[in-house]
Image (cartoon, rainbow over all chains, first blue to last red; front, side, top):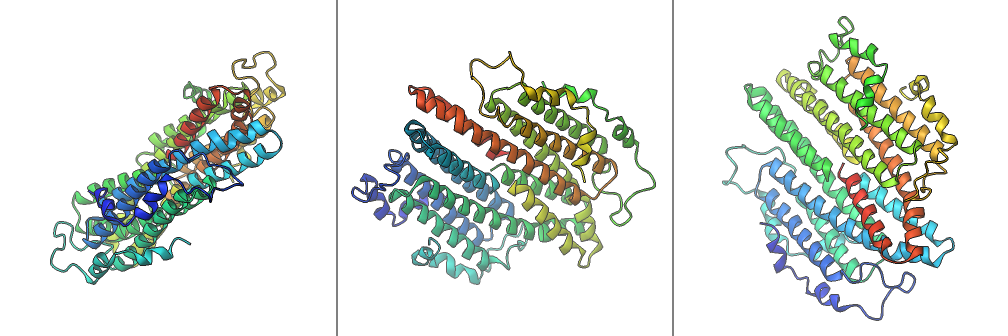
Length: 123
Length: 123
Length: 123
Length: 123
């Protein structure tokens, strides 16, 4: 019901970006782990945006509270699923790279990732 | 950073609805608990929509994974906060009304609310 | 694996209490909603206690981290399931009673319940 | 309130194990990441066990539902905090080791860790 409406959004400017923002790569972090999945990530996020717009419509049309809560749970789940995929790529690339490089960086990377996981769990 | 961008969205059609969709009230459920807070709810949801669009921009611009995860946590928190407010109004109105009416409806309402809470906790 | 070990615990003093601590009932709150399910609740909690003791054994025996995390998730789930049942009974009795009584108490009860739900969601 | 009661528990058999179960080390996984923090982990878990016993006492003594829910949230939080520490050590050792070794193992380890995090988030 809510996913199709994202199609009408003016997301083209971010959509065209999928071919890669060559030039303004983050040199400190290198090419991030999620680089390859970029277009998949954007597709997921646009679907979530559509869900949020669907929620606005539900509130606007006085839909029954419990049905709105069900849709909120679905959106939250979708966000957390996106976060988990991002995290997996981060561990596979950024954290693993730090381990291979050796030195202290791995400790900082692991601590940083754990804090991000803690924030995700607390919401 | 991301909240202001919601301002530019074509949300007027839902925005005007705030004055009330008089006439198509849900008779089965009566006027829902969240009726009065409607414009506040829509404001919250538009802000969340802005956050999701901010996430798309972050992915598109190759922002560092951990910073994206932080923003995902903020959006999830905002969604859960919205859900909690909706739930509070639901308990205060729909569930309390069922209790006052007497009969079996209170059992069904409480079970329904508990299931919604369980879904919210599992995400 | 871990649930049976609760059997050996010296829980008899709380076990015998199931027949009811007649006399020191909480007069401020009346007989709580969970009164009838008391022995079921105690059984659940003893099982969770057994799971926690199982976790201690796993750590002590150097079991693989991921397997311990799986068991932690199971214990957390069991705790949340217990909380949800308690909450359902609370809504069905304490909150519904306040609604029937009328007056301001329902507002206080609903706010209190919502805060408890928020705490449960944040963990 | 509930943490001190763990002191009286017959946990000595696991307590003495802290000096190390030399001989039955897990050769497949090597010395796990959490090895050094073992006694700290066991202390945490005994405290959580004490909290669960405190919950049993609360139910047995007809304590007010909401106060029990508050204690459940505290126990859940303590369990998740334990899980996060375990996970951090796992990432720092097992996952980082797999990255250094090279080959396919890092993919399997990251996938396994991500699944464990997903289970933790869903509870």
